[in-house]
Each structure stands twice: as C-alpha cells, then as structure tokens.
Image (cartoon, rainbow, N blue to C red; front, top):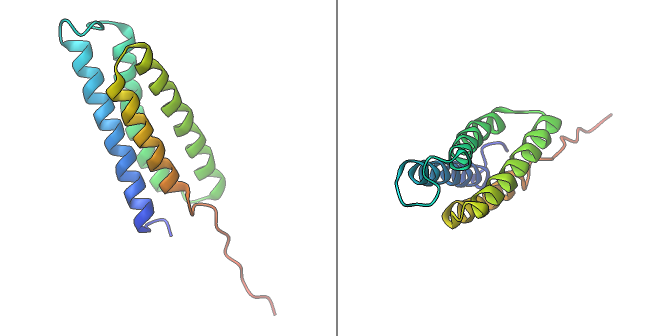
Length: 121
C-alpha cells in the first residue's frame, strides 16, 4: 500500500514542487533586478523548499499511521507557509508549485490510513 501508483505519483509531484520552488527562490535571491535579490525572504523560501524535499523522503519512510499523519500535517503547514511567503515576494511560480505540492500530498494521503482487519476465531 505504501508503494501504490497514487502514492508514488504524489511523492514525485511533491518532490518536483519542492525542487521547482527551490530553484525559483534561489534564482530570485541570486539574480539582480528580480526585486528580492539578496533578501532574507527569498533565502528563507529556498531553505524551506529544501526542508520540504527532505520531509518527502521522511514521509515515504514512515510506517505508522500516527507518524504519517504527523508528517502530513507538518508538510501541509510548510506548504502553506512557503506559498504565503512566495506570494509576499511576488514569486507566483513558487505559489503555483506549492498548489501542485498540495495535490501531491492529497494523492499520497488518499489511502494512508487503512487498518488491517484480521479474522478472529
């Protein structure tokens, strides 16, 4: 169940959103005339996207239901924070990538909470 096609697609979508967000934020931080060159906000968004990519791998490795729910909530909060910060920086591509990341989280968590029902004699 942890390696269902929707789970793989969701984790790839979330990882791709984190990579795009990191690349765009780093570009905005380094390139002159972007409006946010050298600001702490652009650097913070780049670091937050790197943390998001790390959390994708942690979520894929977690096996307990409570651990998965905890990491999904942390990832959702991080997605919302990155999207809000990117909107304040007028980096709409990062905000759009975080919406795609939200779709990835939904795909990953669709069948995350199933129980094994054993037959008792």
